[in-house]
Image 1 (cartoon, rainbow over the protein chains, first blue to last red):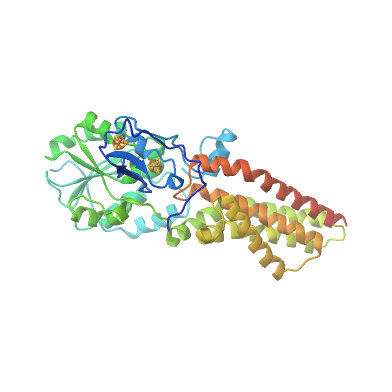
Image 2 (cartoon, each protein chain N blue to C red; image 1 turned 45 degrees about the vertical axis):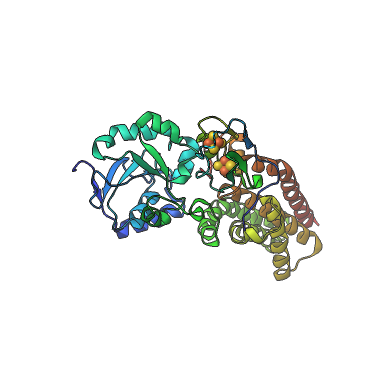
Length: 89
Length: 324
Ligand code: SF4
Ligand code: SF4
């Protein structure tokens, strides 16, 4: 059973045209939702993406992009009140 | 081979006690290992190099899991913060790693050109950049250090299950105290204020109404911060705030069954428990392993006005009950 978060919110964008099929982004995804379909990048379950940014960080050609961040309400609140540090990280 | 300090794989009682303290949230951010290269066992020029943060708990976990192995541990200076959080801040990052590789003169110490990194460090480290900066190839280790022995035994290959993050009951239970402590920090003084306030407002020095609301607040804090994490996968809805609402209804029903009250204070307690539970479970997003920033922003926009309304309604009804 894979826990899914809100539907359709992830900012993950894949560009199969750019993809070299090198596979560098596959092992780093903590939810293992990236795979190669005919040698090009694809995603099996976007609602499981936590926007950690590991895939984008490890793609040498920028074929994966995501607005990386930490899904932490306390951090969002803290930044709203301009207090940098917070409970999560 | 004498330059790197050797560390044992047995943890002392002091290590363990400190581990408990750190886990319970005291001094969690200033418990560090001196960054640099360490020898575990008797490593030689062919031994694997494992990279880690200088967070004492991660470092100790590695030492314990890798008992009996001979290898190099390269601890990066992440200010004593764990790999995952440090990767988000880029202190566990490509440049930090490159600097540590250079300053430890690793290239002279080992013949191979491979670094084993924790998978959870990947949001901060770009393998191709590390290769360019240092000449070393990054191999992503398993997500959990407990899988390291199996990973090393398999020649540096991780089974798919070793790459997938989970959020099992055991882990959620370990996080619950860290949710409860800050919740009580706010709830206890507020509860005391409620008792004192109602004693003053409801002339005649009655303790009952104040104790009833203060009890509801503390019950909500414990429900949201402890039962929330424990019951997480079984609470309905995807948004954590929604899960908290469901939990709040259950908690309120239990509270009112145990402590029956007239309609006005009963409704006040009901809305208070709902609002607090929803807020606290929403706060658990930061400790969960699968929430995204976009999702958290969305649910906060959607649910926080309702949480605020619930709290306001609760206070309004309660004052009304006190006045009446
Ligand atoms: S951002 Fe993280 S969770 Fe999302 S696809 Fe990339 S690696 Fe996976
Ligand atoms: S790292 Fe980039 S180029 Fe390589 S497989 Fe992934 S998306 Fe394609």
